[in-house]
Image (cartoon, rainbow, N blue to C red; front, side):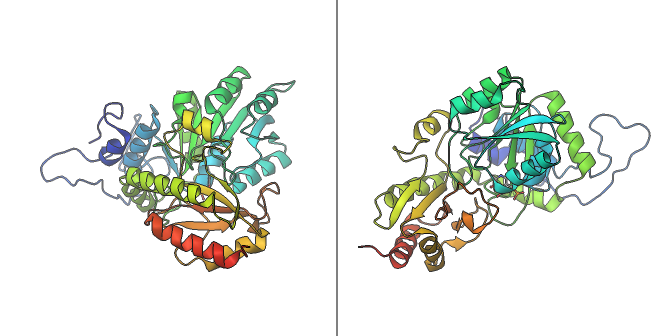
Length: 386
Ligand code: PLP
């Protein structure tokens, strides 16, 4: 049984939420129920389980737990992937409406928005999301925006958006605000508290946390938006499998421990990298001279555990660093217990303004000194240092 998320700390809530009632002999974990349909007759009442494309009791505990962590009145809505949740959120834009979106964001989300624009479903305006006056200007004009999309920190450039200021400006222009909160997690950043309308997650990443699940979620506090997102999920059918959602809830139990450890290690590694002779540039909001530092300190309860590193010697040197590592896993995705990295521009579809030599590091929960030893050795072997 859940405690009230307002009376216990989020790390406690992540452990207690979505448990079955505490009765003698009851299981402490919710069951996985494998059923596509439910016994029913006559006109259904609100909340009745009918058919597993609409709702299932295996989704409920995770949806309740994530809603409590994000501070949503309505349960989260799980989707088959983060992209399915993003597609649902973008469906809230009226036909032909204008979407203001960061230049740097998850590349498949950017590609989907471009695709919508090419089919005249939306009009697309790109902005540098950390340039508040430019975003505010882009929201207004002759054709005010219908939706502002925010990623913060952005993937992979780690720009930090001023979420409260941008949300106020978007609402003044009559636009909805959606935030992809994947990089921060609700333990570090709760956009709904700043008045944001929709939050989406790639649950695949930190929330599930073990690189064994692909899953997404969307949350909205507003009754109408929640109903529309729920209807979109039921109609488009990008639903989650019961086992994946059960695994995600299991992952959520240790979210606080994993995030705490990974963030502390990321800040330490970013600090050490910032004086490494083989490194040209490091991006992590924990660094006092990082452009996003002050803003992140003001609106986040931490700085996240993704680091951007540009080794000296360009893209070839960056590739050589990836190949030389023995502990860090060369892989796409992020947010698992294992540390991983990739050079983002290896994808032809990555934004051309992302530097060719940028490595995106996802810091896991291994011992920081082991991570450093591997990184330091790879940098020294791959980059000629004079
Ligand atoms: N949002 C961000 C910030 C991501 O990094 C990703 C995937 O890498 C997604 C959304 C998409 O999530 P999924 O892969 O679960 O569809």
